[in-house]
Length: 114
Length: 118
Image 1 (cartoon, rainbow over the protein chains, first blue to last red):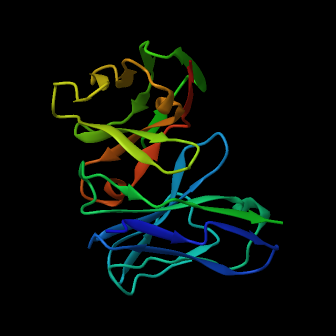
Image 2: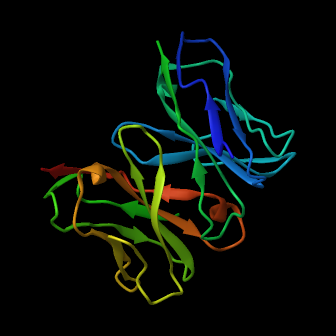
Image 3: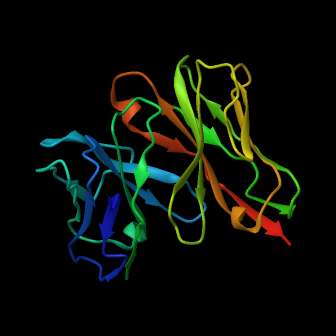
């Protein structure tokens, strides 16, 4: 199993550009989520999905869009990048929400918006 | 909303010694889950240990153990026989067990940077 994979690992964008961060998992997990990590802070939830076709907002959803057409993939779209979106982005997946089941994290994408 | 507080931004420990990282949390729920994650310089988030709030027994995983004090809402991590590979950021995290939006979210503290001195 590859686990949770994310592409790209690094990205530099100009203000106003759009892009999609890719996330895929091969563990047949129902639950997937996106977090961002800023310096001096823990991870904060952006969006999550409890299954194909079902998504919802987390703590910091503004400026991001998600969709889940398959169990495996959960892309994160930045519609119009802003410097405040400079961060490290993590995708995670697990079998169940609301449980002690481990969330598996991808390796992260470091995004810089200039 | 739940909050998680790690009051030690940085800590250091001598190799082979023991260190304890602190974590407190605030919640009105009676059932929930607590986790410690390790983030080495590679950025990968690695689960170290988990604790179910309904279990009174403290979780242990090899050299890692927790001191879970439910009434005090405290969840500290003890690392015994510290090794150079233990150097990393450590995050405490909370997850609700209730059905609903809160159960889908891990709420993280700001982290403690642990250095291991040879």
